[in-house]
Length: 437
Image (cartoon, rainbow, N blue to C red; front, side, top):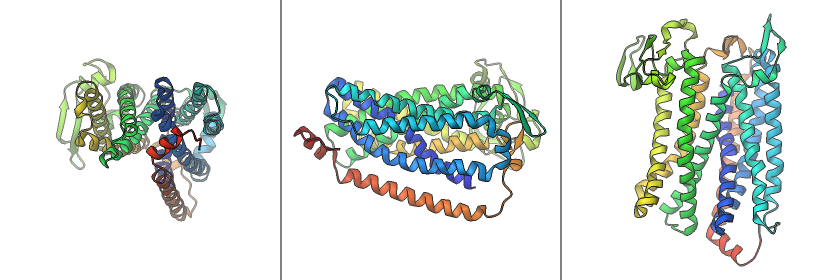
């Protein structure tokens, strides 16, 4: 429960930490190329807000490191050696990002060529992406552990690079990074759309909306590709997880893809579902007659909870909505510009902001629950890895209070930071030749 609480809170700030730096870099680059101060101001304001979320992310990330050893001692005793390299590299990537973020923030207007300042954003973007990459390899290792030999519960030989670059690494890291980009782009887009709905129909808000939704459309396409790669990975390396997600009970060729529906209690009877003939086989193997392993091939106590089907359907529905909304905006901006700022479209963009992060939460729960009952697949179950110490219940409430305080402080600071300093006023101030940060 405590680990779930911490990760659920941390993943919000971790996602922002990966995605927003790229949007900052894109905005500044566009501003330089177009010689447009609106985009430069976007980058400046996003960067200021980003630093607040980084601070909260550091605290929650530290809590996760503490809880790994505190709550999962048996797991760390076995896997600690194998995951120490990516954990170290993740810390290195974060400090690399933090150093250049500080330089980036304090060198606005210090260069004759603005492009030189923009180049400082590149290490920040790379550091954020690498941080996500390295920490995700830890989760990938838990799904497809390799690179070590276990004798009597002790690792006797270890290849840390092989452990880190395991079969799950490519699909998982790609999926995590592009979904962070998508969610962050829609978060910023929802803010711009909300401002327009409130009557702030200015060049600044219009340019912010167009930039963010266009970026979101590109990232949405990449997210679809990531989902396809993930399906193919599961079919090959974690067939029990794929079968549980799709309620695929019997091994067969030409397997149907099941969308939505309900499962009768204590039976394998599926009602009210949409069946897409042979599509599960195609998505898994690019072959309509591909053989998809069903749950009948696994022991009952090694099958993941079947409710993950609902999580998956909800997540995919939200993803499809984000693709549709961003596509409509981009299409309208090209062919029907008068429809671009339709109130219903703007409201849909506002809705996609929180939906992006709900999808992130659902995806994380799906990934973790879908691995059950294993914490280290094939080697150790969750029940064997958890601490038996008392007092964890009290710690849950203490950490909940900490996260509540951090969440409130972060929200209040961000609101005051921007509500007391409107973009139009700041833009006018900078046009007058003053320099303020």
